[in-house]
Length: 319
Image (cartoon, rainbow, N blue to C red; front, side, top):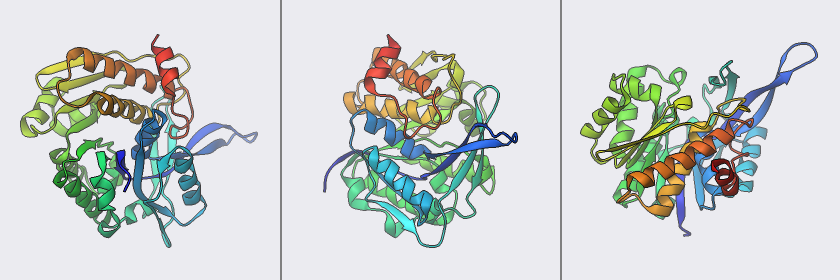
């Protein structure tokens, strides 16, 4: 079997993002391919890495569109399953005045929830340098077992594990269950990316550094912890070192969908190029600047998965 730089498991869905108003005054929505784990893979593929995706879509029009979309981006779709009975998951993205967004999911059930433990390709995970996942594949029992199986395979075979909780409260039975599953995920991961509001919710600490230490003390196997702070930039916690870099505020920002995934794809790119051991403050600073720049670029575009910035574009933006 061919080796992959990053294999991800999780949701692949359609993000309906608002794109204008009809002559009758009704909002017009554009069907953009999306899903956080695949957004991360799309950024990595754009930067030249070999990527593969494990997940499930419906045997329907949207499912076929999604398969074609990730294949065209160079993401291996051989392990994308189709459900005969359950439709592809849909999300309506409501853009707020400040460019942030809110989500409404059509997922009761959605095909991404139907992935089973037996459908996880263990050999694929074994030949990957990183295994990446989030918590949308942990909201329901069936797909949760599939995710847990994948994590155990990764750990048993010394594959580095990358985790972005990407919390979506409406999809959980309760936030207590969500917290249990986020902590389960952190227990397995080597690299953790968490947003500012998520780390406050999870640890009960308002100060991000206090929250980061809360995680590091309880989960010492987490080698690199990243906190994305939106307009306020990002931080990296690596052992006793903390590095913070400002965000690149873009006057052309229209929405922030996929900004965190773009950021994280660039972080994983840096780790694939430089390794996870012996990173200096300068390394961490360079990594965050590069990732912040890419995230800024993606905020000027509708959707994320199909419009990731190229390396030359990011470097030019930094200069």
